[in-house]
Length: 85
Image 1: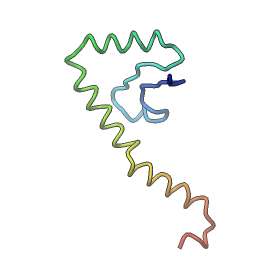
Image 2: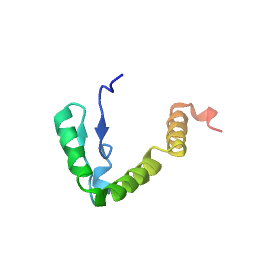
Image 3: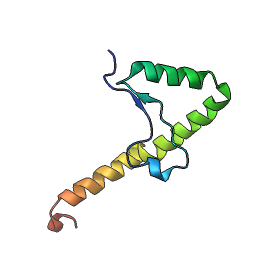
């Protein structure tokens, strides 16, 4: 089953925190995404660094621990002060 939207990018709000922004496009323009991936694939010397940067970004912003902490903080903010212990 095809993915309705594919995004390979820095999440909104994080781009300003990075020195270099990597953005390959979105599923809204499959031809542009294909061209960007083809360009990257044509530069094998950059593939390892790009993969490592993606993994670092994932660990920093989307890892299980990070999502768990963000969910805990959101639920704590929604709970009444008396339940926060």
